Image (cartoon, rainbow, N blue to C red; front, side):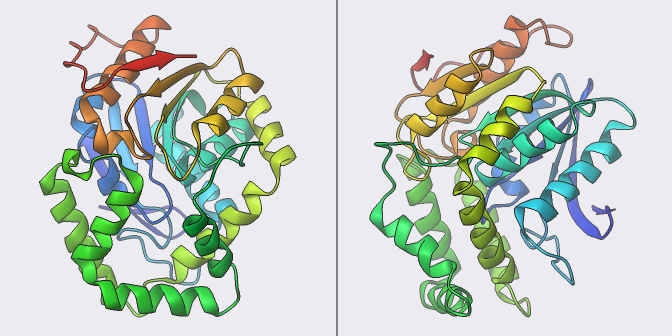
Length: 306
């Protein structure tokens, strides 16, 4: 469906009973990133997911795809689905950073916060693959980023492009639901037919790079979050090191920090059952669960608490 949130935003109502929950994807992603966990999360919440501006099936039109612009879209979505009730906000990667900013600025609107491998500044000793660091530098170059992104997409094609991203974001791509992978390929083909399919990615990448250099600003937003918060991170994340998540957790010892072993940047795609089990268990631990607690799935990976 299309919501009018100061412009068209593609959204999905996953149904469910209970308090509202909003799921926010990361850079280059879409609401399909939540496809394998939304039905289980809807056992105790009314779950929604959105495509950020310029991603998925949300058109960019005359808008911007910056962190600030998409935080305003998330804010509008929170108000729309909450109908005056505070929302559980869940964000992955860039969507995690956007969720931190939203929660810090709108504490009255966010009841609970779940951060899934959120985009965070590098820590001393934290590693970022040279290839990824170079890619962000190129994307930040005026004109060059958009040309290279378009050229790479044409050469690789939809299937290989999706597989490239999944390999980068997971430890074992075979764990990803084949139907979800096929849906992402279909979406990538659809986006390739748009007039300017790469503008949002390049603009968002530049904005994200600038934000990640503003450590003190991000630190202030983390300190200002009032909502009970669960921070989940894959120990083998190539894009955001687990040490960066540890830095965030050290700023907020009241947050619950869970590390998934043998897991990459998108636990909700790579470890959906374990991911839902972690969220359900945290809600139950904090006395935030609604109705009967969910039956935990068989764990797909070990989990460490920090």
